[in-house]
Image (cartoon, rainbow, N blue to C red):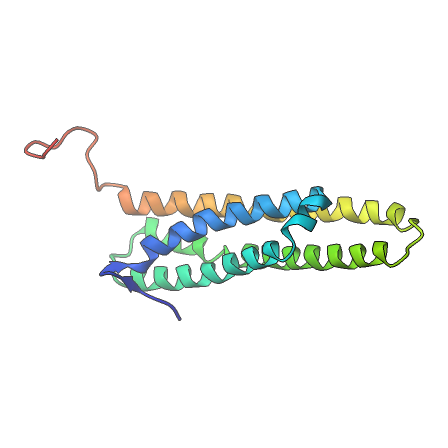
Amino acid sequence: MGPTQINGLPAHILLVHVVVVLVPLTAIALIACAVWPSWMRRMGLVLPLLALVTLVSVPLTTHAGEWLERHTASTPLIRRHTELGDGLLPWAIGLFVLAAGLWWWNRRTAAASTGGGTGGAAAPAMPLRVAAAVVCAVVAAGAVVQVYRIGDSGAKAAWTGNFSKSTVPGQHR
């Protein structure tokens, strides 16, 4: 499905950085565009494309992580990290669906307003806009929290018991 090694290194340890950057970036952009329609007009197709790249990066990273899991000793920390990692895809799907929906809605309302609308559509649209902003904020926060939880568990899995709090004798400074 995707690379398992890059330059002899497990691809997961490199691809994870893409997810760690793109999920919060997409989440922030989604909230900003949901709250401020002018931002959505400026971003245009960039928001759903960013969300799509974010969505694609999640299964690539997960696939590389599953390969890495088969090539390391199984520990409770690694199993926990894997379990949490499997939970990110639904959040990434949510970010993409909301970004695409917000883009579509913005295009539809922009076309309606330039098509000679009477202006009465703004009143019913406000509760819908507020509801959309709340849903976007909830999904964005959930995605970012899940990325944090996965990253924290991955760091613990990789580093617990693998370093010394004091300087190791005979090592270079």
